[in-house]
Picture 1 (cartoon, rainbow, N blue to C red):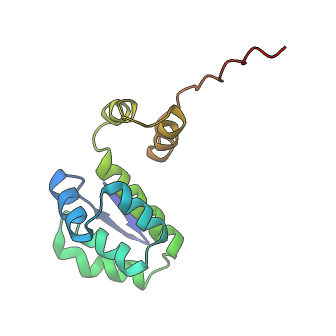
Picture 2 (picture 1 turned 180 degrees about the vertical axis):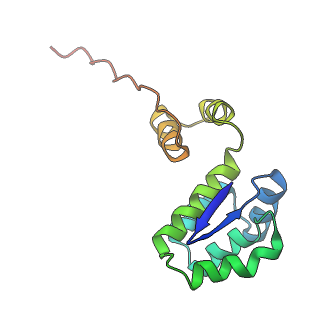
Length: 134
């Protein structure tokens, strides 16, 4: 996965080993990390991204691009959440859709929210049937 910060582009790994390392460091699931990212401090978000770089030698360059560039806190949160979603749902669009569709315990509305964040087409959710009232 590639994310641009200013003029610099960085590649992030969405492999299971990275998911395991990030989750272990924070003792949270990827879903809990997404909630944390929505409210997280910039330093924590930068650390998540730094430890996920494909080329770890770019860690200082990434930190500088974020902290000294024009990246606002909202953009940093959004980039981190997008990364965590890719970590949870890696692969092609078809593989992502299959993983979302098979999400156990998630309603179709929740699945569509995930689809929207992943840039996948939404699935039509049928309205509940009338309870028989005229």
